[in-house]
Amino acid sequence: MPSLSGRARKGVLLVHVAAAGTWLGIDVVMAVVVFTAVLSDDRHTVALCYQALRLFTVWPLLVTGLMCLTSGIWLGLGTRYGLLRYWWVAVKLALNLLLTGLVLVALRPTVAESAEYGRLLAAGQPGIPPQDMIYPPIVSPLLVGFAFVLAVFKPWGRIRAVPPDAGPRRVPRRRRPGPGRAPARERA
Image (cartoon, rainbow, N blue to C red):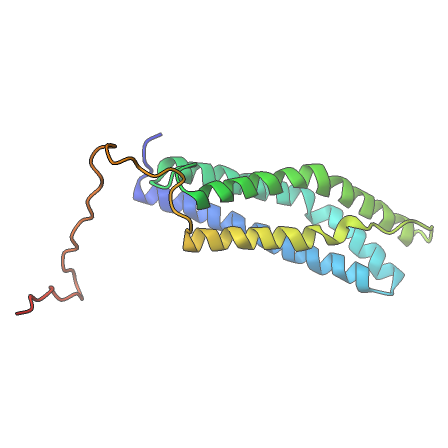
């Protein structure tokens, strides 16, 4: 794939950052709703919270995760970072695949179970409260936050060292003085 132009790269990066921010926002809202349900003594509040999870967790998180994945792959293929050239990119890709897969495999059935419990509770019938619902709003924001840190600090370097006979390396350009920058003075 050819490199992305500056404008295209910025557009894809904007989509990627917006999707990641949305993902974190949904995780935070899910945490508020889940912990309100767990800590509340009011039966109606608990029932409403568990039923509300079905409305905004699974499909919005799946769409957001897929948007992050797609835009991240575009950025990986269209920029100098590559998909598997740097450790931080590979780890972010693995985290995205893991979390997006967990939405379908683990979160979807747990949310359905929680919503059913909320429906039973609202109807005044007994039910078993969901036990596994506290983990997603803890694990997901921590891992998404870790991905944010990786994107900002870009640790660990290249996955494979470039061999010395790999050809010419990119030589950094000298910066020309521009508006607001004084030319470098030679010291005597």
